Length: 448
Ligand SMILES: Cc1cc2nc3c(=O)[nH]c(=O)nc-3n(C[C@H](O)[C@H](O)[C@H](O)COP(=O)(O)OP(=O)(O)OC[C@H]3O[C@@H](n4cnc5c(N)ncnc54)[C@H](O)[C@@H]3O)c2cc1C
Image 1: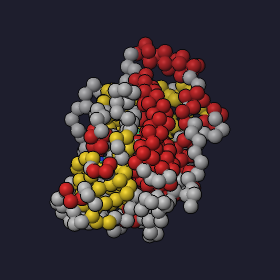
Image 2: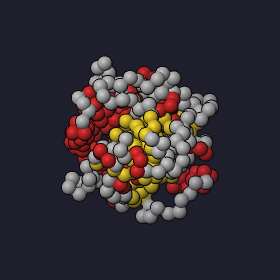
Image 3: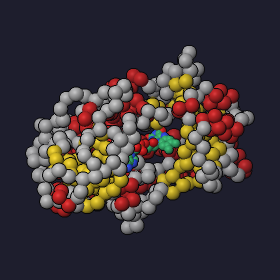
Image 4: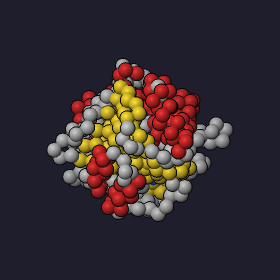
């Protein structure tokens, strides 16, 4: 391999294995056999220096694992590099709408997830004094709608368990990326490991170093932060399966049952600056409660019973990838998926849903390109087609999520009065507001 000798080895290569006693088990099956000329990612050494891989996915979040699972279903192996020493085990839940579920169906994991999470029937909107402003039933608006709040940990574990154990390498943090000869990409990890990859799928999240390398600007803070937590009721949670929103002035909160014992909540508030980073759970809890101290007691009780490890405070950011100003989602043999490409605010609950959509769309196009050759032209064409299909989907959603967030964070008492007395009770229609969850997705099956 011509390029290999140009790089010196900083440390011996040692694939990371899954730490014992982690819930991730991984299938023990060998990596699926390759089709055509792309050999599947059983690593081989090039000289003594640089490890070579076919497809490297950076990031074992939702996008990274869903892409690896999608490729695997199409008969293509990959290696997933994750900076952390395990799957993200803390955190709360994500509300997945029907577009997310269509993808999870297509990649064969929805059946395992559905029974663990309640199907949310509708939503109720209240003012901060507890008065009900409006209620909706999802199925009244769209018979095919499906909404469940899914624990992130369980979603990640379920995806990872579809993959061969050795294909997810933990403690593998990407430190540097550069284009090498013949269109390959050299990845350097913080421990000195070097990997020469034919294809890199960067799923490294909102602060993606790969996106930065491709010329993307940093995501921008939108002026509000969100406290989140997952309340646990050992004796069973008391709520109906619906989303509860409470709208105040410059502050809004929500809570939604996840399972028979767990309820997810958030409190989103305006803050012109990020303020000091706080990680002490007791301070986070107190700050969240202070924001909503005169609000319905359900919410306050829920915050009180929330275990420390699920509490977080997140500044909300996004990036508007304007055509002609932002780079496209690929550069050479490197392509971005999920938040790495299109960070969006969570106001529509679409970040993870869109990351899942990206994964299947990209996997199909990549598989077709590999099937046809693969030549670098075919891979280029697959990436171009992915960008063309996905940009019109994710760009408007990014803007819409931002605008919805700005409207919901209004502070002006007159505007909030009109919102609570006229807009929400009389004007809002839920159906059109959820049309963005329409997304068809056939099962991914290997043609082999
Ligand atoms: C407050 C809040 C609420 C949300 N609610 C919802 C919701 O209800 N529904 C919804 O659909 N979406 C929601 N989202 C959005 C959702 O969380 C993201 O869109 C989703 O997590 C994106 O997945 P990802 O895999 O692209 O990125 P991530 O989940 O961030 O995964 C990136 C992975 O890459 C790894 N990584 C990063 N850098 C490196 C490196 N240098 N080397 C190796 N690995 C690296 C990270 O450790 C991580 O594991 C919410 C977001 C926020 C902030």
